[in-house]
Amino acid sequence: MKVLGIESSCDETGVALVEFQADEPPALRAQALHSQIDMHQAYGGVVPELASRDHIRRVLPLTQQVLAEAGCALSEVDVVAYTRGPGLAGALLVGAGVAVSLAAALQRPTLGVHHLEGHLLSPFLSDDPPSFPFVALLVSGGHSQLMRVDGVGKYTLLGETVDDAAGEAFDKSAKLLGLGYPGGPALARLAELGDANAFDLPRPLLHKPNLDFSFAGLKTAVAVKVAKLPPPLTEAQRADMAASVQAAIIDVLCAKAMRALKATGLKCLVVAGGVGANSQLRSRLNRECRRISARVHYPEPALCTDNGAMIALAAAMRLQRGLAATDESGAFDVRPRWDLAEL
Ligand code: KG4
Ligand code: ZN
Image 1 (cartoon, helix red, strand yellow):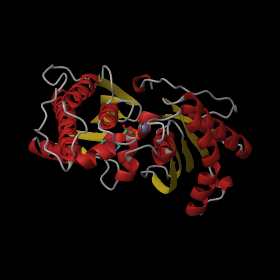
Image 2: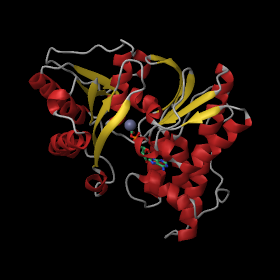
Image 3: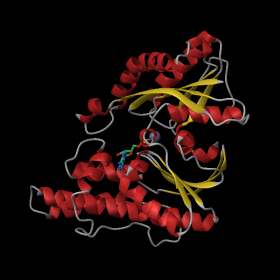
């Protein structure tokens, strides 16, 4: 069965083709991605209307590219999957509208996919896939959650951020240091040159026994420390601040992920979402998991941030297990706000 996946929830247009046989793990045949980062950079963040318009321009050429690379005719596609939410309403509507139109023309069903389910299952496309059950640390630009995952669609929320997401903490701190948008990767690069102990920053909720996060205060602490330094900041001060912020975020994410493993008694951790690309976070989690004889799994680096492959994969895994409510009505909606635990 061949599943075409379309992702358009934010600032990346992603299209991919995933194929599966009855019981075998789904395989990625081809994928293509267009990032809008250059376009939004001038505004310091995503401009929703510009994002929607750009998705319209990109989605069909990317689809043609994916099908050509996979050597697959459009008529061979069995199901058209798309991101139904959460995300920007206008951006989601583009992907959903194109998916439903394509499917209607082909007389094939559609399947609306939860974006975070895509992130969460994306390590199943890696060379080292996890097996159920596991604890998932979902850390993206909009979400920071710990979930217990007992199977496809069996998600129990263990804890989540009460304010900003980890990605937001990276992005907002990066902005305060004059780094571009999105700031996460730039801040991580600058942090390599700095001293993580240079600035004493808070580790919010670290010592609370729950599995929740809070990152809004961290950004405020960075703003206060930066304001106290005589401007302009030196390169060394910026690098030290970047390293200190990154260390604070990683300390909290690691401590809570380890606590979630302990609380559930599970020995398998999956890390997904854009912040999961952070190499310091990965080496710290690798070390801590080794210490307690737990396994940790990540998506391939290219599949950490938004992409079409994870959407096609999540649809394929649901179809394989008979868990998919496909639609042939030609009607569709999007869910800009949508809790994963609702699935
Ligand atoms: O999952 P994602 O692509 O989009 C959402 O669904 O939100 O995550 C994007 C987030 C951004 O906040 C970005 O700054 C962050 O992931 N990010 C990183 C790194 N790469 C992306 N944060 C820290 N270190 C990185 N290497
Ligand atoms: Zn995402």
